[in-house]
Each structure stands twice: as C-alpha cells, then as structure tokens.
View 1 (cartoon, one colour):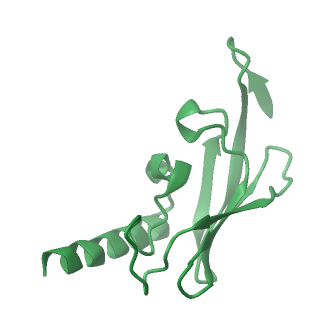
View 2 (cartoon, one colour):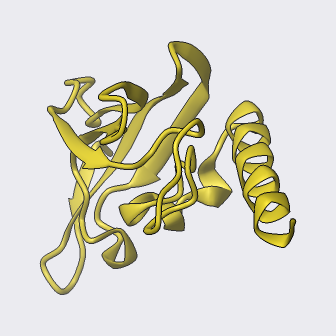
Length: 124
C-alpha cells in the first residue's frame, strides 16, 4: 500500500528521506505525510542561515514512489549564529518539531548537542 485516503478524505503516504547536516548524512527518516500535526507537509526542507547564507541542513524527502520532493527553504540560524526565534542549529522547527521520535540516532545526538550548548549559553 503506497498511499491511502482515510474516512475524512485525507491522503496518507509514507515519506522517506535523509537527514543531512553540514553535508554529513545523519541517517534515514520516515513519516506519514497525512498527519494533521505535520500540516500535511509534503516537501523536502533546506535550512538556510539568514546570517551567513549557508544551507546548513537538509531533509531530502521522497514520496512512496521514490520521487524526491522539491525543497522548501526555511530560515533557521546555523549553530554559529544567534537567533531570537529558534535555537541556532536546531532541526526542530516548523513541522519537524513533531518528528523527534522519527529521528535517526546521529540526528538525535546533533539535536541534543545544539540544545545543550544553547541552554548553557542562556544560564551563563
């Protein structure tokens, strides 16, 4: 079963892809793109740092047929630059904040590191 529609007419499809930070592959990720808490997200993501202009992370997603989805650019400061809106270097923005349980181990380590560094900066 590649895609299905539930009783309320929502299209569900398992999207699979890769978590990439600074060019390093951190592992695979998959989720049901029909989840309401994800706002039916059906695109790849490029994390763009508005301070230095680097695309420092990507979630390169493909649909159930294996077709890679176009990238949506989101503005999130990399871990080298401060931000008043997000934890710099965090992948947990937009709908991705609901995907922590789907993160591969290396992406969890990355997220833990940037969250810890940010917390230590805030208390010092």
